[in-house]
Length: 134
Ligand code: CO
Image 1 (spheres, rainbow, N blue to C red):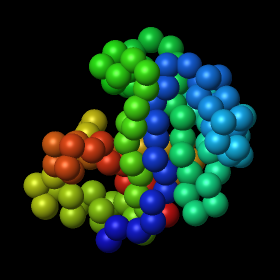
Image 2: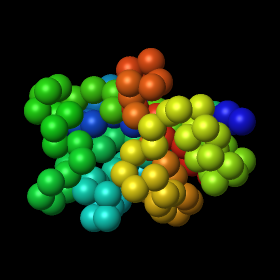
Image 3: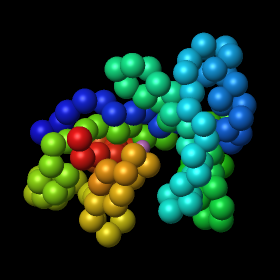
C-alpha cells in the first residue's frame, strides 16, 4: 500500500529564519511562502529532487502546530507524508488494522491540492503520519 516519501514537514517558529538556513547555509532550492489558512500554516517547499522538506510556520489563531512549537520552541520534525495510490482504500485499511485516523476520519485537501489523511502518532512509532493520494 505504502508508496514514496512525499515530504518531511518541519515546524518552525520563524519561517524567514528557516528559509535562510535551507537556502543560505544548506544551499537548497526553496519555494516562495504559501499561506494555507484552511490548515493554519504558512508553508515553503524545499525541493530535494527525490522528495521535499516542508517548513511550516503557524498562521492565525489556533494553528494545529502551535502546541507542537510550545513543546519544541526551536522547531522540529512534525510529520512525515507517504503517498498511497487510493486514499479511501488506505483509510479503510487503517481502520480495519485498528489505527486511528485523526479528525472526522475523512480525507481533506492538503497543501498540494490532493486528498490527505493524518494518522495518530501513537499507532505509528511515535510519528505523526500523513497519507497523500499519489
Ligand atoms: Co504534510
